[in-house]
Length: 481
Image (cartoon, rainbow, N blue to C red; front, side, top):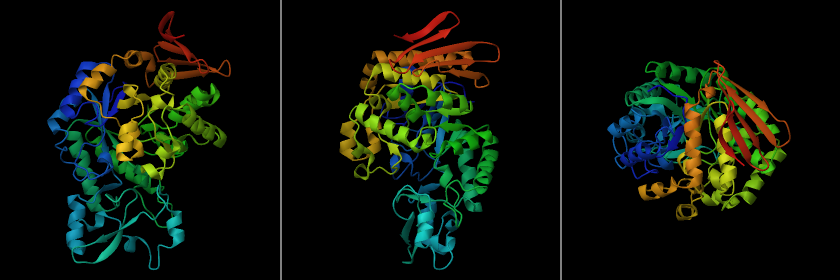
C-alpha cells in the first residue's frame, strides 16, 4: 500500500494487546479513520534493546504472531518496518558463523574488525575521543572465537548489537535481500534505524560521514524503489542534518518539534515554534513522542541553550512523576540527550495542554506520527520503570484489551481521535500545499494550511491560556475555551 497523508501509529507488536492478532482487533474496533498507517516497531527475533538487536529479518518472533497477521494489517494501513542498517544481533547466523569459523567464514567482512580498521599502533586515545558515541567508552567489543583467538569488533550500542560494514559486498547483498523481503510482506516505508552511524572512516567522527553516507543512502533507495518502497532515515542530531536530507528528496523526521512545542506551552511564547513551522519541509513525519525519550539535541539552535535548559528544567517541574534520575545511567539511559517521559505526563497530565500540543502537531508541515502511549494520553508507567530499571520503559506501558476499552472512553482520548480523523480527511493538509504562520502577540499563534485548489483551514491558539479554535470558512471545527 502506498503511503497516505494520514496519521501513523507507532507501536510494538505486543503493546496494544498482547500480540499482532489483538493489535488488529484494536485497530479495527477503535482506530478506523483515526490512523492511516502503522509503524510496527521491530517484531523480528531479537536478543536485546526491545527488538533493536534483530537476529533474523526473515521471520516474525513467534511470541507476536506470523507474517500473515502483519500482511493483514497491511491491507488496511500503510506499514513501516525498522531496518537496523548499522548493526545486527551477535546471535545472528552471520556473526555466529564468524565466531565459529573466524577467517574461514564467508561473513567475516560483514563486521568491522578493529585491527583491520586502524593502522598499527592505533586506535590511540585521540582516535577514540574523536568517535561520535552515545556511551563513555570506546565502541569496541572483544570477541573470543572458537579457535580461542581474540579480537575486537565495532559495536556502537549494546553488546548484543554488532556493527555492520556496509561497504562490503557481502553486507550489500544482505541489505538487498532484507529490503526485498520486507517489501514482499507489505512494507510501504523502511525506517533506517541508527543510519548516521553506518559509515565508519578513519580520522573522522564516524557519524554522518560525507560523501559516503549519501552513496549508501542512494544505493538503498535504488534497491527499495524496485518495490515502490520509501525510506525514512532515523537520525537524532542537529536539525540541519535533517534539512540536508530533505534537500535530497527523502522523507525526514521532525524530531525538533517535541521540545519546541514543550517550550511554547511552558513559556506561553509563540515565536520559536512559529519560526520552525515556517522553515520545516512538507515531506516529513512529525513526532511529539516515540519509543525513545524526548530528544533535546534535535532542537539545539532552534532554541538557545538557555531556552533548552528552561524547557528541560520546566519538564521536571511541570511533568507528572518525571525525575532526572530516570534519564540517567542509574536507569540504563543510553543517550544523555533524551528525557524519559510520556508526552502527556511531560505536560503534567493536563488534558488542555495535551490536546493543544496535538493540535499544533496536526497543523505542522508533514504527516503526524503518534506513539501508542500518546494515542491513549498515557501517563508515566512508574511501576514498569522500577521493575525493569530501564528509563525508557516509563513510556512503554503494556495495554491489555480491557484497559484499552476503558481508555478510549476518556474525554481527552475521544477529542484526540476526533482531531486525528479531521486531520486525515481534511484536504487542506495536502503535502503539496502551503502553510502560513502569524504571531499577532507574544502568546498567540495563527496557522493556516491550504491546498492548491484553495481549500484552507485555520488554527488560532493562545499558548498561555491553552485556548484554541479551528475554523474552516465560517464553520468552527473544534475549539477549546
